[in-house]
Image (tube, rainbow, N blue to C red):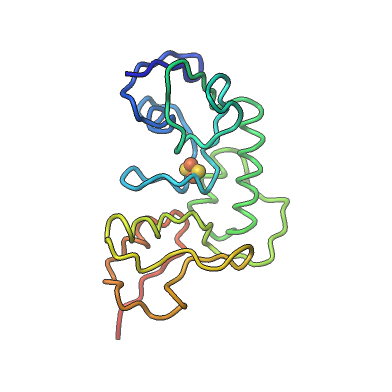
Length: 186
Ligand code: FES
């Protein structure tokens, strides 16, 4: 068992849990987009940032990947967390203004518009949840990240129609922004 403190309250939990898991189990609100309880956490969207006040890696950390440990002191609502979260929301909104889920979540945290200009708008936030669902649930590895920098995207190898995709739809199901649409085959 591990003893640690979250928002001034002491917890004793099983070893190996992340801060986010403990928070969710205990009604502590932390926004997430790239987390799914059945998939490996990757820490991509950065919305779940919390502040480690005392611990091995003090400062802002993604709660979905940071494991609790003895003596850890964590806060989810410091000014630093709020400012960072607001910027992350604005960045995501600039990139994906048409994502209903993202817009709703941002509104819950008081962010209704973005001051950031983004050239190539879309719905994909490159969180990789679809890639992990394809690999870990469907066990197909039909899609993955491709290219670098602003060209980065999720796609099939060489952007070709995948021969190993079974059309299960797991990628679309877990996508937090509705970026993936399943088309019926002819
Ligand atoms: Fe933790 Fe996205 S939910 S980084």
